[in-house]
Length: 188
Image (cartoon, rainbow, N blue to C red; front, side, top):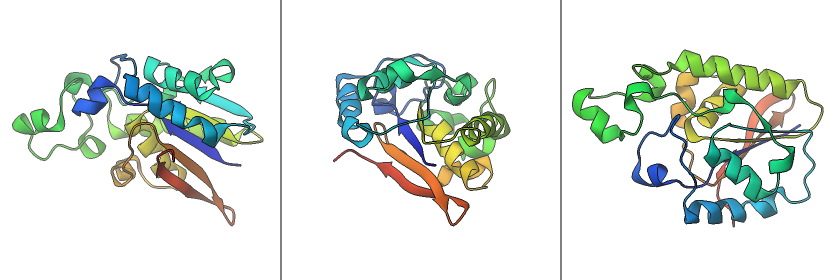
């Protein structure tokens, strides 16, 4: 069983580096192009389950890739709730909170790493109940935490998995142990 994790294409805020949690932004034209370039990696692949974040940028990516009609919406795949930091860049946040890191500190008025860990653990439980491959359409920070939890690391270790927009990651197994097979793969 493999889990195909697809990060949505570019948005105006991902381009500018603003934290985009619950703000429901559409893809840019380039974001739609990035999503379309992922089609060959998915084409003809049979998925037992397709899940998408409820946010438009993930759902639109799923549609463009060609799996929109099969997708079930899973709120647990929503991006980190950045609370008071929504729409701010790390540089703006560091002016008032030097050294802040979402994976360690969470967000005032939003989620802590433990909150995201509980959400992705529910997604992993759902995946484990499926017989066959799974496709997930979601966001940068939630997928980084999911990767960490997949291999048994705490949510805070999601900081070690950089993830660009419009990319594919594949989680799988090695000799019965959960492993990361492909990470941050841009379409060729």
